[in-house]
Length: 437
Image (cartoon, rainbow, N blue to C red):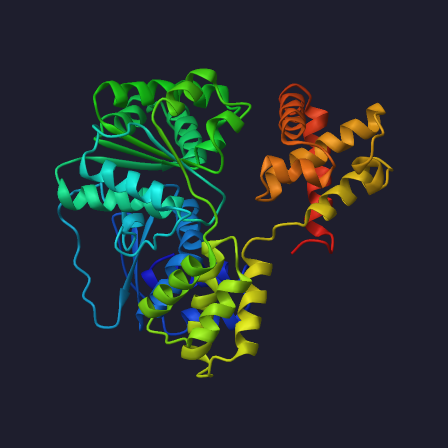
């Protein structure tokens, strides 16, 4: 590749292997490369809306491809219209573009999240002094990461001298392994330990990874003992992470635990109205209420519907009707989450063991049936947003039995490679069957 345009054509070719021609034409036909400097590709697109879509949907694909292409970490900068590209000469590698736009001001507060919101504001106002660590948990798509970034955004504005580190649980593992391979463990530790604010998203992904948990334990202690703030998010409380090291569990529980539940109808309507307003889209109250009544458990899906309606209006120049809303809801719920139904999980697990779904829901205690029942509970925990209580109800058991079953399968997967293969096979059957939504 001899030029910037060559690289851009390679990227488009790579995107075309994963996207439809319509998607390529819609989002990239009027997009152009501007510069490639210091491991950053700069591109230009004509509108803020297209920038938003490219950033949210396709930037990770582009960045991953560039990283593989040049065997180093890459970034992507998107300019809009006549916006000038100014090379950053500050040398500041502590910038966190993830936080942009995620503030307390645009977080919609309701009964389901007001405690977590208040705790987050308190931490942002007095980092290291109030509620350390702050542990925010709840199902996917309810605003945990928004609060995490809002804390970082607020502290960055109030205390610009403070150093912030943000990382996801699985990325902590990946960075640690990479640092060991490259002999850069000290650089890795300095990056995350010598900070004033440590933001960790989706901590549940380190559970069961012994080496990662040991490293994280020492990182946690280093930051905590220095009196600096730690904020963690998870899809569940520490007590429900059966493979989490006890030392980490006690430290997490030693701070403030704040849960976020699915929002009520009024809050969902406020979220939909706020998102539409920010995107310059006017939606009548009956449409807002219809969307909020249909999407009940996931804020991310709610926002996804609004974004899709904005695309319909801007790209297709079509009016927002009940039919277009239904189409947007169908697209988002099918493509956005791919959460299988509990009945589908039970059916495919039973089929794998040559059983019927009724066998798993009944009182048969044979070894084969008991194993299938425990696997179904484990898969419901992994593949859905159901609580332990709801998982138990699906199979006529209580939440204690569900938790015990999940822990047993986790232990078996850790000690028996064959069990990992069984889980992989059943999961594949579930995700490819017609019962997924």
